[in-house]
Amino acid sequence: MKVPLILRIAALVVLATAFYTYVGQLVPQKEVYPPAEVEMKANMSTDEMVKVGHQIMEGKGMCFTCHTVGKQGALRFPDLQGVGERAKTREPGLTDVQYFEQAMYEPNAYIVPGFNPGMPVINKPPIGLTDQEILTVIAALQGMGGTPTVTMDTKLSHAAGGGGPASGATVAGGTPAGGPPSGTTPAPTAAVAASATTPAATPAAATSSGNPLADLGCAGCHGAGKKGKSLEGRKMDAAALSSALVKAHADITQNLTLGQIEAMAKAMAAGKSGS
Picture 1 (tube, rainbow, N blue to C red):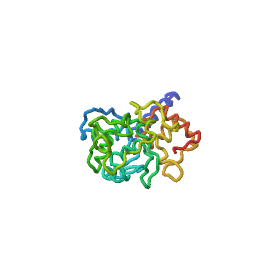
Picture 2 (picture 1 turned 135 degrees about the vertical axis):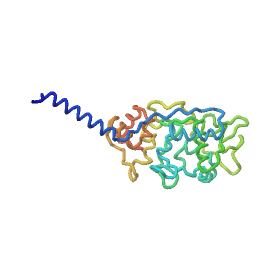
Picture 3 (picture 1 turned 180 degrees about the vertical axis):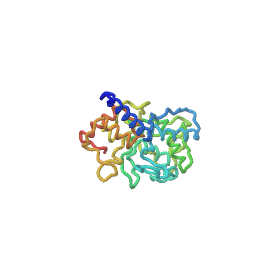
Picture 4 (picture 1 turned 90 degrees about the vertical axis):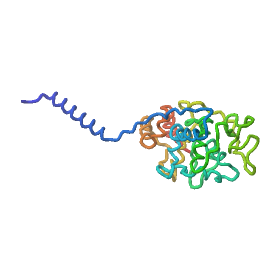
């Protein structure tokens, strides 16, 4: 009996669909979710701040996209193991808290030898941590090899309103309001006024410099003489770029909007790099 052509075609389609469905199930699937909301309480203890700080570093802060702990993973920026102790002597004149503060509000003020600049300003888009979230991250960093000393009342000189701590509050470094420890220098405050206001949430496609590649810190890896390929002049539409980002930087992609990815694609096509 001759099987009609239409039935043979239908059988082929069913078999092909079943085969590719089976193959697809063999490929490990990684579900990517937006960063979880972290509850911020004004009266957190230092120990609670450390816990919340780690959650922010793993989620919204995207710290472990480029930093490692114990050099496990892609070492794009300095390894954080033991950083709580190293920070006390990293820059002469700065306490560990002042050093961490500067590293997040002015990341290019000091570059660890052997690494490239490229870390984005943490309190601006696309990351946009609040001053309170940054305090908890500092607590977590202090706890990596050191003893956390900050509290939710600690005043950072770069933070909104950081120029005048309230009576009885503490300033960066855990010292009483009125001045830094003897022999130390407050963290640099130049051009703070322009960056002091911290957004409550990350706008859809906002950037701080007009070059989304620079704002995302792409120059830390991409460019001449670096591990990542140069982005300058590469023409990719938003869909192709999104796919490439998922494969290479899933932790970053989960925090990006379509508008930001489109802006990155346009910047690359226009001949801009990440620097």
